[in-house]
Image (cartoon, rainbow, N blue to C red; front, side, top):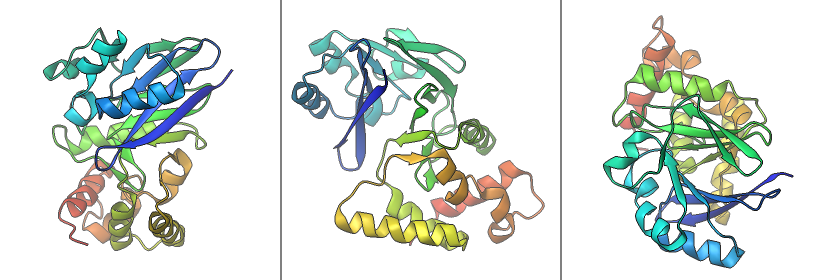
Length: 253
């Protein structure tokens, strides 16, 4: 039986995700951006929470751990860095596996935004929860890691099947699209940006996305093709990525 994903908005621009293995009824929350929102959605769905799966330590991803565990008694799984701000029951890293009933998640190392950032990938259902590493038309800021580390992380995600559904943690797509258009004039990107702007005008979500769509239009995954436009011609791929990331950091559009 498949994995059910329930997505809901929280905080100012975060998304929360509750995932349920339908064969067993076991349920996990991907990160804990807002305690009240998570508990409300669980009550509305009638689901009991068994696990929290954390992608990284930032407060809008792990800040609700303690309060949600106090209410539900769930087990918290995530990278060691989470203990900087919140309780953790099981430490995991790249290459580990995490069971949610009959569903098995592969843990993918995805540092760069933070040093110990991870993603959770369900290969049976081709679903990935990527936190703040990969966004629709974007990627996370390099708060702790290096450009080389983030580029390697993005390549690990890009190696997943093109039809993998990608759940990223923020609704940043319209602003990401405006930047992307400033460094890339590919027709596929222009068409996608127009669709994104129209969706946001309607109040529609632009998450989830897919690996294939990101490979085709995301300027951070396309960085080597954009090297000349960001003054990185002849540089290694990671340096081209660094130039695109730097351009985004200073972008005012």
